Length: 271
Image (cartoon, rainbow, N blue to C red; front, side):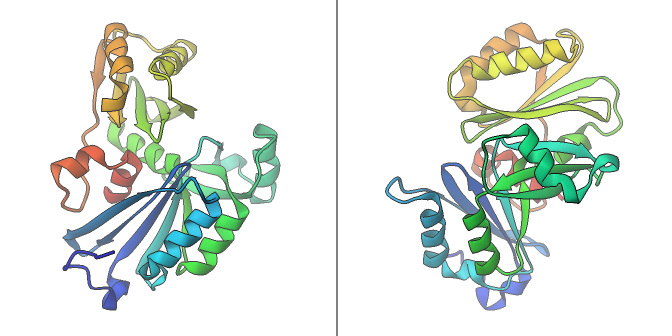
């Protein structure tokens, strides 16, 4: 694979590398923190003929430059299996117990990630073999959850405004819903959204349970909105104030990249 001419991996320590693991895909991007004109993104579908770990191994071996010493290496895991714990209640010794209490039949290593100005910790899992392989194949990687990026992004977007906000992001055949009352997080969940009406049901259910007002409270939509037009049209009939959050990445992106890149990637590029 050929990288753009303005990326010279003889000086890989100048660049940040971010890898994104989704249930059915693998992507990465490289950018330079000191030069907003340098950005490259590539996405690859996983082969149905190989196991998940074998797909990851093949990609890392084929893209040998991913193992170089970058300035920073991040791995983001996209998964509906996670739980948030307020910092004051967080005990790292109990993360496995907490995770297994909420998700009884899941396997893998249990990891944590900081969320929203260090006030919350997110607990999530990753296949143990995948984690071990990436930990030894990449240069000092840190592991993150996609919703830690989304929750922090949406929290910063509303600032100190009052009122209730529901942020809904469509991605990877999922919908992640993050709700705030002012700057206080009410709830966040990730649901499968393969049926055209799935997202509508989940959003409407959360609005009802959280006491949102269809006339005054706000719904923001982001991500792969085009794939959810049926849900969007129904939501516009139910909720008065619907918009899209304006994101300001610190790298230069094309209009197509701004539209097509997953919101958690854009969130990572905004900080």
